[in-house]
Image 1 (cartoon, rainbow, N blue to C red):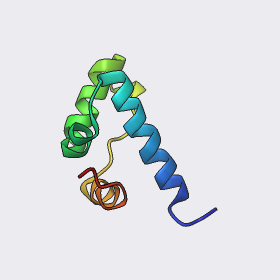
Image 2: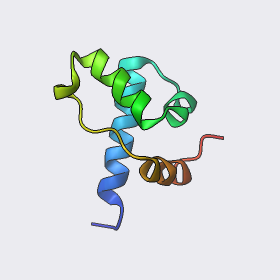
Image 3: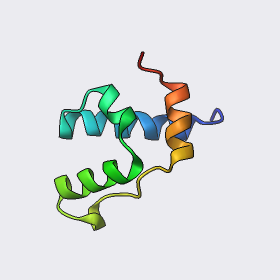
Image 4: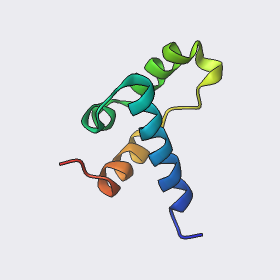
Length: 70
């Protein structure tokens, strides 16, 4: 497996889920803070127990570098 491959798959999966579940376009996903994303996903899925921990700022920054939207 290439370095970052599991990170890439996880980020792509999360972005896709947020787009499908919340109808967020990419720019909304990338501008959301981890706390905002976690809170919205928790509310949308019925509670914090069903939602994995939100990515921290470092992870979000890496995602933004890997997948620029504009």
